[in-house]
Image: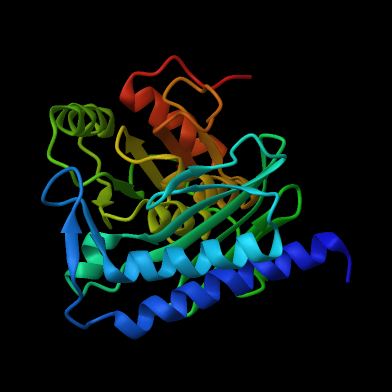
Length: 265
């Protein structure tokens, strides 16, 4: 087995092991702590999943760096850096809602190379490698062919903010009497991978979240044929928490709706 194949197997085995650990705790009463506010939580399951992931990475790749939601940054100037969200959708998990995933991505020299998003409740493993496609349980996935915002099924943040209100208003005006379905999962990882898998047509992320929420879904969506970029067509980077995920044609329609300057050529 080549070194690349070993890495591909390692990241998937790691995401599955962490996910199975969280699934054993799902539906139970788990202790939790508030972080920045009452809806921003960390549970004992987050910490257990994080410990498992970090332990295996440090054992197998001691020279690699790590960026984790729960433990911050470690050796981030290394050639290879792992980006981890041990449970994306912690609020859902704490409320016994089966909408969460384990997110793990690997970047090399600043470029995303591998990504996994594992949904342990439904046993769905999403995996992508740079220039190698995106897969669900080993089967190739692609974004939907939906051509317009009208009659589409999309996702947006569920936070009741002025920015969300303004975006919703812009989309309504763009529909001009037409219709679209808009949902929210309160889980950035699921939102991104469901667009990648064609289960949803688009996703707008408007300012919440961090690199560990977006790195893995970004690569999975991009490798599934989605355009993943900012509101003006600017490429997504690790510091950005605003993006649109959709097929290239629908992306341009959404940019028009939200008042962007258009996709980059």
